Image 1 (cartoon, rainbow, N blue to C red):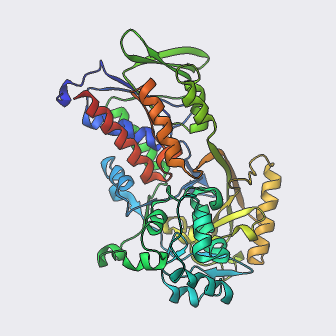
Image 2 (image 1 turned 90 degrees about the vertical axis):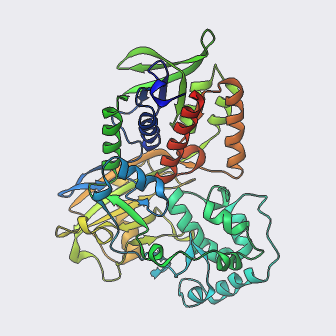
Length: 471
């Protein structure tokens, strides 16, 4: 079917106007300008867990993710498509540390915490001599099965507990708010690739193709100068300019097949009024657990599986402190706190050292992460959270900080947890949907990968499936 013949009689309803839903809508309308597309968002703003606001005299300080990977093309391509490619910046400081009775710079040559060269690990004071010797056994151990699909089970077997606890778990945990002993190996592609290679992970790493010199020297992360919220704003504006409709404060209750014409009825409440939209296709981009009720009547097996999904809650605290109050060792982009050392803080970003555009005042900006899977802290009061942060930072940096500004953002059940065998779990859901509701799709962080590039990729891929179904 030619693109111009995909008319408004085809209506795609997208549930959730985070980056996945917005990128899906943008891709649909770019490919089929006459298509009718409506996004339903339960919150008063778009963006999901991406949010940027003013803080401590700075106009744009992120409240969650502050960057996206540039070496994975999907987010960077979306930024270009919506006119932000000339407004991207990259971190000025690349090195990060781990706190273990003091700050230790991460060894070189890590891949999400996995050592790929023993030489850099050997010179690190973060890992004990015993831990280094245990890690070297990876070279002679027999191949380890990946049947458990647990990062922790696999990596502990290859490198021992210390390397896993001090390197692999903190780095993966900082991305996913995860406990890697209960997290799917298959859902972290870089680690899954290493595990599926040679008998030894170190040998697999050595055989991986080296990036070209220009790629190796290029920045790893990027973000709009106006914060990650600028990507949301620009994409929403592009969607609306292309004819898409974004409806906020719209709480979906159910998705029901319409027997008469093979379409679907999406029921929702907006401003206290019950409404329904007829759709030829529906894309569910909302969190898995919170989407279960949509299918309670139309596909109860799907509802049951979605309801079993896990999501971790985190808190992000932004602090502004006088620059001279930070000790000399508070350098680089920030530090991670391994689980054996954690009380409340899981990571600290020295944001004004990491980003040049945030280093324009007399204040140093810190972004502090608290909470993770199995350690929710979001129900604590602001006063309690503030005391947790200041006490932990004093323990880590040996300094009493006196914030001149403070902002607390709670992200309740915001990080999907990919339990072992998550891929089979998602495929099981999609199989049920294909049988019961074949033109309803799942996309977003709950399903096939967290992070902005992965969510954009899922949005675009789902749009391509829908466009192909019209042919």
